[in-house]
Length: 504
Image (cartoon, rainbow, N blue to C red; front, side, top):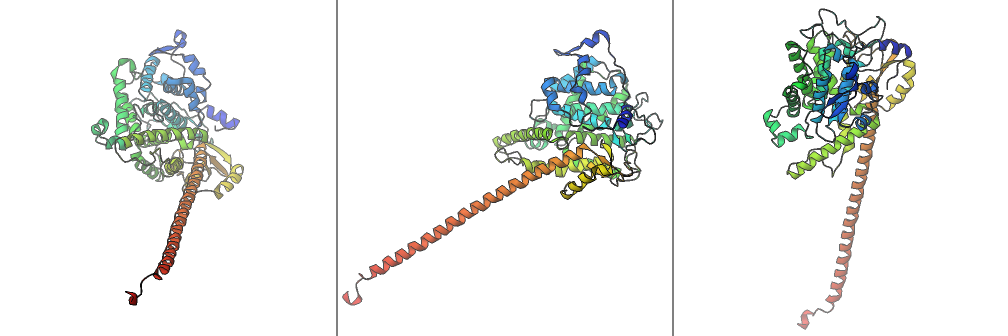
C-alpha cells in the first residue's frame, strides 16, 4: 500500500468528487438479482471492498467472502466510488442484473474466471484513480476537451490542485463516458473464456476461430458475446439514459479496449505508445485517439499485472495460469497435437515461463507505462532511497534495468518527456517510488534464482549421467581387454597340443 504524508493525503482527498447516491429509503434494504440479494448499505460499508485504493488488493480474500458475486460487487463498488451512477443516471437494478449475468458467464477455469475479471477491473480503477507523481491534469471543462457529443458528463476524478502540487490523477483527464467504458471493458474482457489459447482454437478449427478468421479469436468472442448478452434482455440495459451518439461511442471504446488485450498485438500497441510519449509533445489529453491509446495501455497492464503484485499474490496467480496451461497440454496430447511450450505437466518449467513472461511482455509494458509518466506512486527525498538504490543497482539485471529505474527514478526523469501533459515528473532532489516496479523486480529475481538453480541441478544430473556412462564404457572396455588376454593365454597353451607337421 502506498502511504502519503498527511499533507499529501489531504491534497489527494480533494481529487475525487464523490457524488450522492441515487437510492434511498426502502431501496437501501437491498436489490434482488437472480436469487441473490445485494445489500447496498452493507456493500458501501464493507471493509474489504473499501480497500480498493490498495494496489496489492486482497482479491483472494474477496473471492472467499463474495463467492460467485465477486465481479458484480467489484463493479458496483468501482462505479459507486467514482460517481458513475449519478453521472449517467444508471439504474442500479439493471446494472446489477447485467454484471451478475456477465460474471455468471465466466467459466470455472483456474485462471480466466470471474475473479480474474474483478482483479483486472480493480487494476484499471487503481491506475486511473490513484496519485501519480508529476502528472499534469488538464482543465476538463475546456471547450477543446470534447470526448463525446455530450459535454455534460465531465471527468469523475476532478483535479483540485494548486499550481505547485506535484501529484495528478489520470482519471481526471478522461471524460466520464470514457472512464465508464474502460471499467466496463475490464469486467467484460474475458467473458466466456474457454481456458484455451487463441493458437489452440485456431489449430483445432474451433467455431470461434472459423467465425473470426483466426484473428484475435478470443478477444472478438469476449466482446461480441458480452454485447450479445447486454442486448438480449431489456432488464440488462443500465445505459438507458445515454443518447444514441453516447451509446455508439461507449460501445466502440469497450470493444477497442477488449481487443487490445490480445497479446499478439502487444508489441504493436507498446511500440505505438513509446513513439507517442517519446515524441514532442507526447500524450495529448485533448485527443480522443491519444486517450484511447492510454486506455488500451491501462487495461493491458491490469490484465497481466500478476508479476507487479506482492509476491504471495503473484505466486497464487502463477500457479493458476500454470494449471490452466497444463489442462490445455493434456487436451493437446489427447488430440495428438504437439504439446505447447510450458504446457506439459510432465515437464514443468514454471520458473522459466515466468522469467520469459516478465522479460518479454510485462517488463516492456510496465517500463513504457512508467516512461509515459502514468504509474501511480509517491515522491520521496533522494536521500531516503539512495542507500536502497545503491544496493539494488549492484544486483540489477540487464533484462530489467530500465524497468527498475521506474520504481525509483530521479526526479529529473529523462524517461518521461517533460513536454507531455501527464509526463512531467521532474522535481529537484526527489525520486518516484512505484510499488508495481518494485514488486516486478522482486518477483523477477525470485524466478531467475529458481531457474538458475534448476539449470544447475539439470547440469549436475547430466554430468552425473555422463560420468556413469563413461565409467560403464571404461568397465566394458576393460573387461573386453581382460577377456582377450585370457583367450590369448588359453590359445597359447592349446598350441602345445597341436600336431607338428612331421607328425602328420
